Amino acid sequence: MVIKIFQDRSNAGQFLAEKLVAYANRPDVVVLGLPRGGVPVAYEVARVLRAPLDIFVVRKLGVPEQEELAFGAVASGGIRVLNRDVLSAIDLPQTIIDEVITREQRELERREREYRGNRPPLELHDHSVIVVDDGMATGSSMRAAVRALRRRKPRQIVVAVPVGARETCESFQHEADTIAVCAITPEPFRAVGLWYADFTQVTDDEVRDLLERSRQAKKAA
Image (cartoon, rainbow, N blue to C red):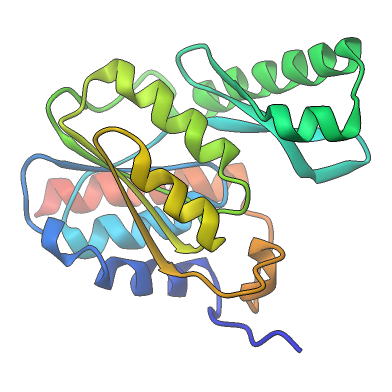
């Protein structure tokens, strides 16, 4: 029987924020949530650290009929990361790969318009950027985010998740200028959702609401 560690994503974000207190009250820190699931977690991290919050859109490339199995991801900035080990194991036709990439690229662009509207992305150049998701299994989405973010030339990238597979978390320690903070790395890991009592899908409205609440809080501070 798996013991649920977190009540929900907000609870997970509060727990994760405790591991990131060294970044609190620093003017160079920006928190980015990976929509949708990472945004409620990132909101709590940004609130505790008193840092600005933004989104960074990454879409997982799921194997048809096995959507939880990712063969890669696409991210803002035209970045594409493919997991060659997964692709070689399942022998997915190139036409299917291209169809999935096209579909997810369209959804990525839609979400950026939906969440951010006319507001420009936050400045990341020479900043410490904390990239937050609700968990990390294969790490394909997060790896795509990190590679895309490097084009924005941050001073440092911090990969931060409440729960993750140990090997995946450790693999990010070998990425240049990247620190990985995985609050908990249970074994066997299996899947992110197993460690939450409430892992209900986050809606677009919730993402927009959390971004607006974070902006208003920063204005009032």
